[in-house]
Length: 263
Image 1: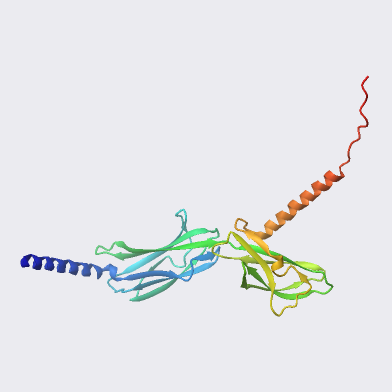
Image 2: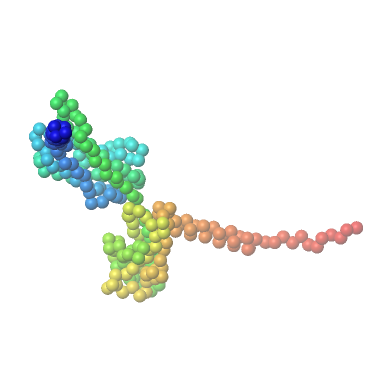
């Protein structure tokens, strides 16, 4: 019985030694891919960091990077560097991805390879980062001034109850006129219903300007890609309805007189 236990322990020890030996080869390189965000506006850039630890000169590890759309098509010129070689034991390199012009779901795929004893490249790891590419939504608010003096004011967009600091604009509302203030709203996931309005800065005197504040809130729905276009179409429909109503109201009524009596 003791002999059997000793033999079993020796076998386990040998197996463990083999496992450690295997982990000391290509798997000893610890590889990572990370970024600060996973979404970006169409045509803009986003960065990810490739890291590798445990490299030695005998590893000879390289990697390739590529961006694919949801159909699996490779996007050309989307990555700053498509192929590189790990050159140090504490390796770090920043990949810059340029978002395609079409919104949608994309994948950054980084594939790591190592030369085997015969000089052939063998894949040892692969890292995938999902990227969501979004189009900006153009929001607009019309401000009016019925006074004889133009007003210089600073305004912010407030979207779903939160002031957006980078929407800050310094504008001039003309005397006895109006101005349209637009903002390209970029967000990873639009709410089904987005409410927004313009808010004056705290030190702005805007008493004679109408269109400011929560009382003039607008609502954008997720299926509308451009709020300005939506507003224009709504105005066109109202004008057509008004013209038809006026035409019907003013259309003359034919008078055929009294009906003839029967003989």
